[in-house]
Image (cartoon, rainbow, N blue to C red; front, side, top):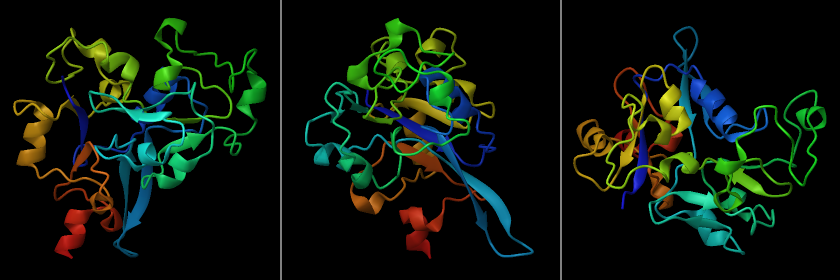
Length: 254
């Protein structure tokens, strides 16, 4: 069985946020609640400073602290390496949000992120947070994976588009959107990435593209000192960098 992971090439990423939009549309997310966030920050000082960016999905850690603190077992890790939330078991205690060192979990009732409140524009007729006009088809939704229109009073997060990748043919090494036979199984953020800065595949397969890129280009994980061991790797060459406070490799070089 594959152990899925992602590689993001910061030399190729343009900060266009197409991944953010694709994720929101694919997963029926509320506007402003970005599972695929892109953080913008300044490097250097005036007049030589520059604006740069860092895409930040859920890291789907090998040793996820969110899973360790969940009192109900709602947060769990699948056999193929993906961290999910079972909405049927989540009680909205937010322990996982506190434990996550990456800030990539969301509680929709916490604060209103947009004006007007979109939940009042498209109110839900059921016990959901809203009734989006671009709702995910019912056959794809699965509350045990945290996939679909979110119920009220639960936590949500990036699922690596588990409703897609879980249907990939057995033995698949790389989910490459350029392959028409695999495109429908590839995470939406990878499919929509115009500069092809995102790669998705089996971290345990030595012949996979993600393994090769991590080895050849010195893939770096964020906040690796926490022991969470993320399964999202960044490639940072001369044209790009990872914020020093988040990169073990860069901190060690300083």
